[in-house]
Image 1 (cartoon, helix red, strand yellow):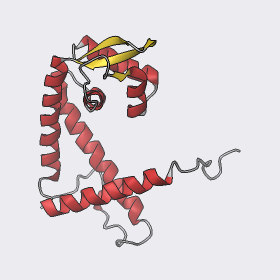
Image 2: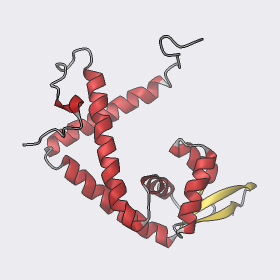
Image 3: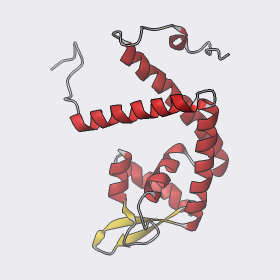
Image 4: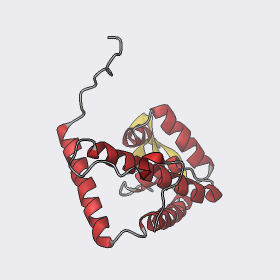
Length: 181
């Protein structure tokens, strides 16, 4: 039997019935707690390797580019920033740390002298293996009591919600109630 930690009073409440107003908000809260816990555990486990969760995410993003070890196919720094949804300056900081650790290498873009491409090194590939192992371990621990069938349902629901969200486009930005206009 699992118990709710005392520092999380929201998780202790039974919450609304499924489909009732507030259920989506409770689901979002539960997902936020799960993400924070998984991220914290992953960070602790990556610490001995000198890799932060943000750096791990950048490495995984770079590795998804076919041919990421060759200058012609490697991702541009600006594209990495866009994919990570961070400012180019922040991407530069992440890449600086990865380059210092020998996990990536910067090369001039052969098609545009002003652009820089980020190549994954052999050490970067080895780090990706460790990152994958840590992510799998943490996920298995967190979802260990969840049946494979429930995992499939949760994954299907989250994929469908993400697809609907992306298809609708970004929601309009409105000022919070009571904010000066």
